[in-house]
Every structure is written in C-alpha cells, then in structure tokens.
Amino acid sequence: MSNPGWIFDKIKGGKKQVFSGYPRSLVQRRRTRKLALHNTEGRNWPSYPGTLNRPGATAPEFTVNLQLEETRQHFSLSEGGRCLRAGGVAANNVCVSVEVIGYCSGPTPDVTDLTRSENAYLAHVLGVICDEMGIPKVSTVEFKRTGAYGINAPQRLSAREFARYEGILGHQHVPGNSHWDPGTFDIDALLEAMGSAKPVSDSEHVTKPSPPSKTAGSKYKRIKNGSKGSGTRSLQAGLREVFPAYKDSVSVQNGQLIDVDDLFGDQTEAWVKEFQGRSGIAIDGIVYSDTWEALEKHGITPTSHAKAKNKIKSSPKAHRAAKGKLRKGSKGKRVEDLQQGLRDTFPAYAGSVSVGNGKLLGVDKIFGVHTEAWVKEFQERTGLETDGVVGPKTTAELNKHGIKF
Ligand SMILES: [Zn+2]
Image (cartoon, rainbow, N blue to C red):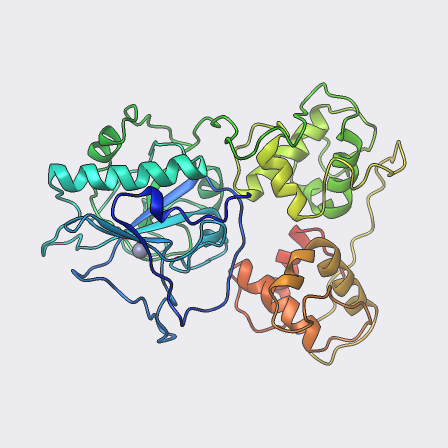
C-alpha cells in the first residue's frame, strides 16, 4: 500500500518507538485481516529482548498502556512485527500484534478485568488499526485460561483455520505458538466498545469478506466465475506455472493442471480459492484487489502471463522423486532447478537476503552462499528450521510452491 504504515499519530496518546537492536525484517506485507491480542505479563514498558537479547527482537507492532492511555508503535504496518513464532505459518506476516501491558492471571493490572475507561481506550486503539488495515471488527474464537497453554491447546486454530480467519483473536489462537495470552480476555466488552455487532459463532471460524479497502482503489479489474479475457488468461497461465502443486489439492478436476483457455470457470475458481486459502485471504474465488496484490508477490499480474499460448492442455509431469538433501557444495541439475524455482517464485527475496546486493539468485548449478541464503530466507518465512539444508521438510514446503527439483 502507498501508506508506509506508521499510524501512531492517528491514535490518542500514540508515539513511535523504534528499537535499535531488532533483527532485520522477517516479512513484508500489504494487507492483513487478523489482529492478535497479547499481554506483557508485566506492568512496565517492555524492551522485548527475547532470547537474542537485543531490544525489539520479539516486539509486536504496538504496545498499549491502558493506565497511561499511551500507545507505542514499534514497526510499520507494512513491515510486520516479531512477536509470533512462525510455526508453519508466516504468522507475523498475516497478523498485526498488539501487546497490552498487564497480567492475565492475577496480579494487577489485570487485562482480563478492565475498567470501563481502559476498555474504551483499547477499543479506540484497535479501531484505528482495524480501520487502517481493513480488519473486520469481529471475533469468533473463545478466550481460554485453563489448559490454554501449548501448541496443541484445544482453543488454538489449525493452520488452515487461521488462514481463513478474519478479525480479532489472541496469541492463544495462533497455530505453532505455545503462549496462552491474553487469557480470558473480555472480547465481547471490547467489541461492544468498538461499536461492533455481537460476534457470530461459526465452527469454521470463517467470516464474510469485507469490502475492499479504500487504499486498494480501482487499480485492478475484478474477475470471477464467468469472466473472459481481462487478465483471465494471465491468471490461469500464472497459476499453472507458479503453483503446479495445486493440481493435487483443488477439488475440481483433481490431479490436472489448470487449463489456459481464457475462460474463468469452475476450475479456475477452484485454483483461485486454493491460492486464497494458502495466502490467508478471504476465500471467495473472486480475483480483486487483495488477491491480485497477493498474486503479484508471486509474479502473477493481469498481464504477466498474457502472452501464454492459448489452450494449454493438462499433461501431468512424471513425478521426480527426491534424491537426497541439497546443501552448500551440492552441484548439478537439481541445484539448477532449485535456483530457478526460488528465483522465479520468490523474486522479492532479493531485497531481504543478506548477500547478493539486491540481485536475483543466479542459476549456475552450484549451491553456494547465495543459494544457501535464499534457502534460509524461505525456511525462515515458512517457519522451518533455518539451517540452509534442503532436506525432506524443506523440499515438501518448496513443492507446495511449485518448486520441484
Ligand atoms: Zn503473546
């Protein structure tokens, strides 16, 4: 989005507090439809040193002091915070985090027992953030205390439920995380103060997509089932080229690659929904602003693949079995395919890996420091161990993005 994402001046008592020692950006994002509430388990402003022992290493985007009515923004909304463990989902990428100073299990200030004015101030802060990011002011999760700690705690969402979720939840609901903050937070009182309707319970945790944000504008054309032309062919060819692995999971014409026939039908809709589900955006099968924005990150735009040949018919490729790990020092055709895949699928990594000076990954069949840095970047963003070695788990995750080698 054009807004750089610093919104502290729209918040009453809002300030900017940037830490000097936080690690480089994990994520870049434009939109999100989720907000996770946390509490600090303390009564003072934290410095979030984490295990890295560097101020800001585990900081959220915002910290709120309800007693002082002061809010500090630590990261731009277009960058994302550091406080969620990735755990298989790039949680910081798709979720704004707000830490409320206080405890959720007894001592004061107790975030589960807010005064009317504290609740009103928090409602104001979250209202500004939700309006800015287009996050629906709803919550369909239950805030728990007993037995709520741990990755497998019953209230925690699965990765898929989390991807589909839109609205406000707690750290205790984020998959791959173990924390149970903010306990039995009174979400109903908060939503009421935010002027939201009563939360609607829904076992699937799916909420209706909200209208496109004002920042999305009319840059993109809206295409859906029944559309022809106007980017449909580019969409189809792009999905086919970048995400061939979808053929094994879409519910329509299972096992076949998407046809590039210029007609947005059931098959195209199924592929779009698959992409939306995996990208954490509303699954409506309609390609408009936020879906186009998400596709663009993978190099797919209304014109990127417009010159693709018409009528590409499905021809499932023979599956090449993995033949051992790839790591620094590896050479050959499989390294070449890995490099080409990373380069084509994640060009944005050029801007964030620490080697290569912003250039795309070279394709030279030799697994060197540059390739290792791109692999680590991928592992970090997908919540894998960042060892730079392409073993079975990393291979499986790369395959999901259509990178086969
Ligand atoms: Zn937390």
